[in-house]
Image 1: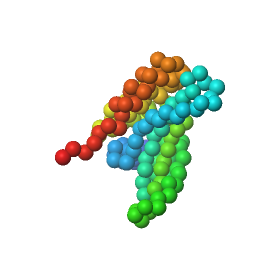
Image 2 (image 1 turned 30 degrees about the horizontal axis):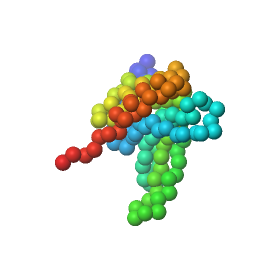
Image 3 (image 1 turned 90 degrees about the vertical axis):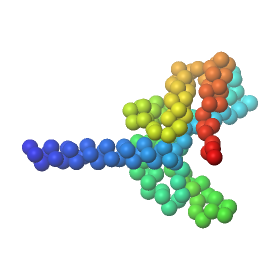
Image 4 (image 1 turned 180 degrees about the horizontal axis):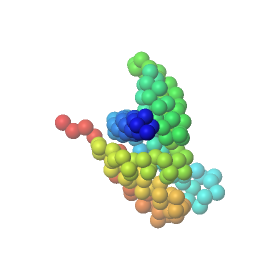
Amino acid sequence: MSSKNVSGADNQQERLRRIGWIVGYVDGEGCFTVSFFKHPKSRLRLKWQVFPEFVITQGSKSKSSLEKVQKFFECGSIYLNKRYDNHHEHLMKYVVRNRQDLLTKIIPFFEEFSLETAKRNDFRIFARIVRMMDKGEHLTERGLEKIRGFTSQMNTRKFRA
């Protein structure tokens, strides 16, 4: 009896530690964004694609940390973003774009385990937009304009002296 309880407690403790690490990691290196792309030849009436994504960016030396996040969420992809400027390493990006993964994995996680920085507000807006999209609101002129208004409130924090 005690060995199973200890093991269960250890597993729970490890899970909580991992959750705290992920929340802190995303607070520092993550981003919730919504982009718009014009598609003049699209069969959609409004000709716009709304593109939500959750991204964590790291130098290529830290790829293993992105792999841990990918394994935890069981979704998303990791991409190499080559840099040819004065930096000494390329960037890696963990990206979740699939709307169902955002709705069933990413959003519920960050609603249960809240971010601590200004990204909390970006996340709230992001979650609202993804849910609007799930209802098809992005396919109407009114809904698209509401989404544009919400995105103008995201990722606006600048460092202030």
